[in-house]
Amino acid sequence: MTAVNDARVRSLVTAVFGEDGLTSCSDTVSYDAQLTRIQTSLVTPLPSQLQQYFNVKTEPLLRANMEAGCAKWTNNACESVNHVLKQRMQWRLTHIPELIEKLRSLVKEQMNEADRAMIGVGDVHLRREYTPTCRKPSPSGAACPNAKSNAHATPASVS
Image (cartoon, rainbow, N blue to C red; front, top):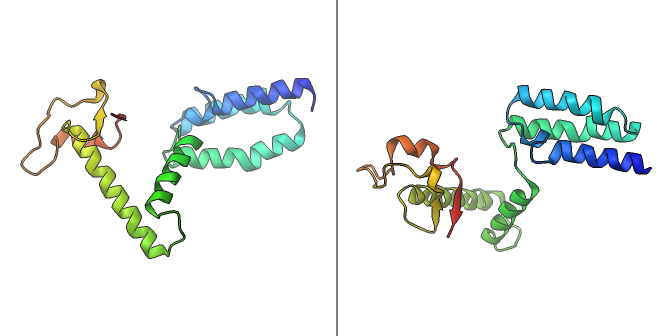
């Protein structure tokens, strides 16, 4: 590969995986607009094998990721979840029913921790801009009836 192609590949990687890249698009309209720009300006000048790899292997996976609602999902986040699952399974192979039960338990604990963050208790705390106005649990146990629907989508930090 030549130095020119190296620079083109770096530009493509930035356009796809950079902060405002293709992977940051969360809807089809913005994704398609970004993809068209990338294909016309960055993919077309590349060698045919790299064009084919991008168009046949990479782009369909990125589109599926966006359509699944996982825009901005990074390998780092994936590795983090993978590590949590391996710890939960005690780093050993297991049967599917046991795995399913462990996953259910993990999700339930995460949901409980998100609910605890909504009322300001526990190890996880919401960022100030996401803190609801209601801080006490309702009689049903929910943090805030209106805030609960957003509880699991808001950023939090571990203290």
